[in-house]
Length: 176
Image (cartoon, rainbow, N blue to C red):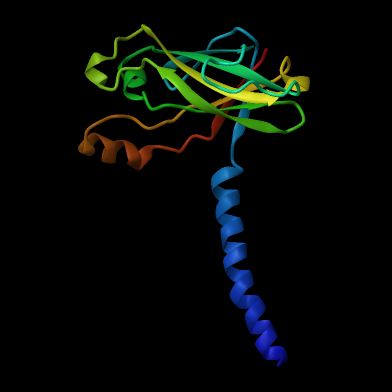
């Protein structure tokens, strides 16, 4: 009977440990860099500038209770060269506070060209997201932006690049 219990623990415990290790390897490797409020940051040949602000309740949505506030996040990206233009995949974005809490945002607008050929160098393109945060932290939330390192390129060039390419874990926290 004890052997059966030990076998059950192994049968259920081993996959759990494996999933935990996969999580740690894939999600806990972020290196967070703080960016001063209003300042741009250039990473992987793309310049980013981010702003966050309170907004009134958007049209067509129900009013929030007083303890919740709508927030608008705007990010401007500028490809500094052709490599930056190839890295046009949407970044991951969330709102965060100094206590380690975070809030999701949803896409509102995006004027980044979907065709790399239409992407003009040194031209600002923008993303806009909306989120809801507790009113108590609305004036101090920061924007956490994780650029996507994916490059739109041919399959042959992609294989060549992948041989020497290191995955990036850089996350940028833009101040207020």
